[in-house]
Amino acid sequence: MTDRKTILLVDDTPSNLTIINAVLKDDYRTRIATGGAKALEIAAGPEGRPDLVLMDVMMPGMDGYEVCRRLKADPATADIPVIFLTALHDERDERAGFAAGGVDFITKPFSPEIVRARVRTHLALREANARLARQNAELERRVEERTRELALVRDLTIFSLASLAETRDNETGNHIRRTQTYVRELALALRDHPRFRAELDDATIDLLYKSAPLHDIGKVGVPDAVLLKPGRLTPEEFEVMKQHAEFGRAAIAAAEARIGSGNGNSSFLRYAREIAYTHHEKWDGSGYPRGLAGDAIPLSGRLMAVADVYDALICKRIYKPAYSHETAVDIITQGRGTHFDPDIVDAFLTLADRFRDIAAEFADPEEA
Image 1 (cartoon, rainbow, N blue to C red):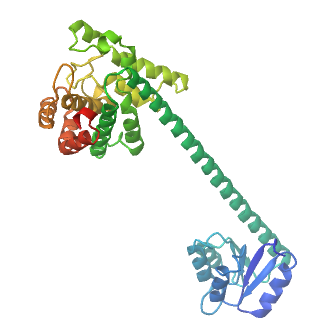
Image 2: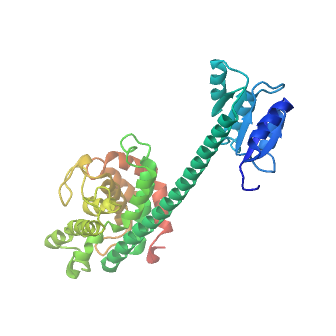
Image 3: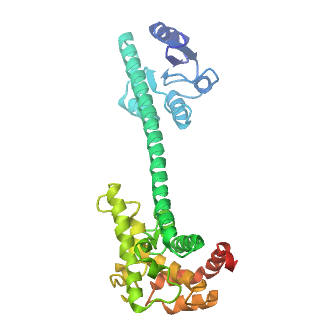
């Protein structure tokens, strides 16, 4: 008996309940309610929800339409199909039943075969819907699991490339942590700006943060004599150093090709490639490697430009002392509209104190 479907029969007339119960009791477990309130109590009770409700419309106190509406309003019982079994014949009554949430409308006097057929149909449909819901839930679970796996592969790929860059670069790991945090703060500050709102969603900001450490990965291709020179570069050496932007783009593009990301426009390494290639471009077109200007420079590169220059200014180099935070802010401000995107500089100025805090949090050991 326990594996049979349960049907709740609702009617205020005992003789009607006796008749319909006789029609269904051999195939189903039946439960009986003589009024609307009792029906709701049984439907939500501890013995478990019925699989289907077969209900009269005209009952004292609470009619069948109201009982149906309440069942549908409760998430715990909303999926239970309700068939109205009533002496009402008017088309308006049928419309009212369907509007209340009923799935079928059978008029009295009824044919037992029709009742059994309608009950079988709606129970089968409910089971099919439940099976589909289970399948969808399992599919969503698998998609979420696969998404987590892909995110892990993405993050490990970026981390591995960043680790490679650190092995050759004479910058510290703290420089990487500082600059990626600067980039994230700038992106968060600009996410509601009309120029950037369409691009700076949560997923993009996360990728910008994780991709920023690859901004100088191209330095792995710069000869040691130039990369590790303990002093200021000559003009000729600087031309060699400038090639790291192209080296970085090529290295990341090669990685994109190996992981099958097509032309790279949808690749998770897209922003890393843009940053590596364009963070030395300038708003007025005087930067390198291509002399891009204005919005032709990808947003990722424009954000990285401010972050990288600020960090270079406040850090000691062989060829320069560390500038104060205030001096660095002045220099960035002077570059508004020439070196840097004006709107990004404006965001930077609102975040100046936050930049100083980040620099202190991730200070190099000798500067702490």
